[in-house]
Length: 214
Image (tube, rainbow, N blue to C red):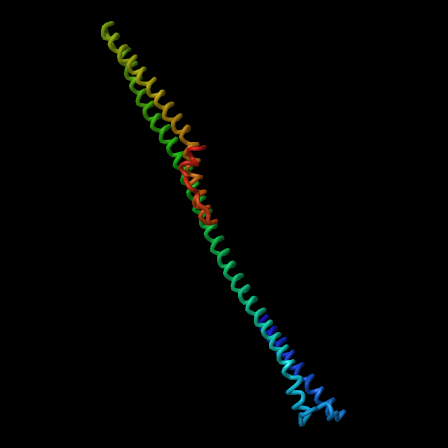
């Protein structure tokens, strides 16, 4: 657009000079010397009485075109700046989304891992208890006297209590993991919200308060 503005400006100057040349030629053709006044020639008349007014108007147009060019230059720079900022914003957003996906996979994997560890630990404990019960059952079949059987039975009931406590502990641990999970999810997403908010120039004043409020 700068080339177009220069073309317009140069064209106006050229047309103005052409008009003055045509006027000079017409005055020369009419030989209207009475109209020259104190001037010795048509050219002197035109240069003294007419050209200054034309140049004033051309100067006004030049200034106007210069202002237009400055505004367009500023607009172009602003558009470039905004485009750059948008590019940075989308790059940061894409990076944040990718990081979020990675963190979300890790977060879910950690929770699932804790549940699986709890189940595996209980299964191992249960297998050990079953072995002890099998051993006690074998002892019952081998004891020769009632007194010895009573002692084995006492240990058997003690082992049954251990087994019962094992299941109660397993239930408590699983319930704790499941009950804590919603709060952990809230804390996870509030932290991600804070990260995304920074991309939009916003700040979460108190992320912990947002979690506690929920």
